[in-house]
Length: 294
Image (cartoon, rainbow, N blue to C red):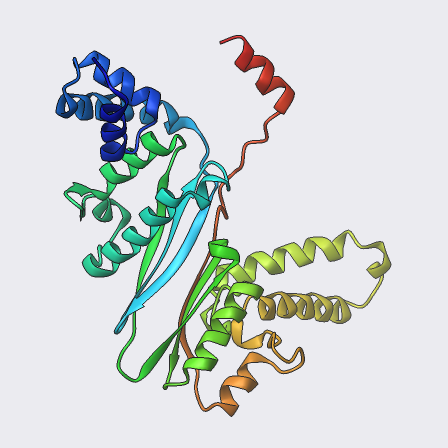
């Protein structure tokens, strides 16, 4: 006989739903160890069915210990699941293990031992028990030396995370710079870091815009080139951290703030959840109609 206490015990062991636990026990004649295996097998199978879904929600986080920090993004299909206790614990655990193991790539990270299973297996297991596709999308290990300081900032519970490395020991400014990175989304520390192909691409865009602007027709070539150069420069300043307006006072450039504090930015990393992922638009009425035919 499958008792309620046996079902609860299996649920506590696996995190699977009550009905799934009952089915597993019925299929294995009440053998709880075999039921765990049964659920794992079914969980992996159901996780495989979810592999085609788009996981563009989720969370990001930053954690540092000593001279090492990690920033990571873990995706789910809905924002609701990103607040799930099991999901939150998974993200925290991944941050700890990635910080300790410092894998060189995502492929290497997925093979890292995580409480007796690989990270990949743990993510698949979470997909099965939570009921949505879960993905460790990306991470980066950030190192500093003893003469540098980390600045960390997590916005809106992980919708955006940023970590900055500043020379010196100004921890308060380092955190402010991480907030600047999170809010203003620079792509490079300074314009010196911007690849020439980025500048060339923006120049080509501005040339096309100017050529299609009738108000500039007949203007001297020197004037037109000056307009193009000015617009390109403006765009480059917007993606250069030190050329941005400092968010705290709304008037100083970040470069000025850093100079007054006798420091500079060595590096930064910014993650915004779901950036670059094409989110599928669903027709809710059509989806309900489709589901009713199953």
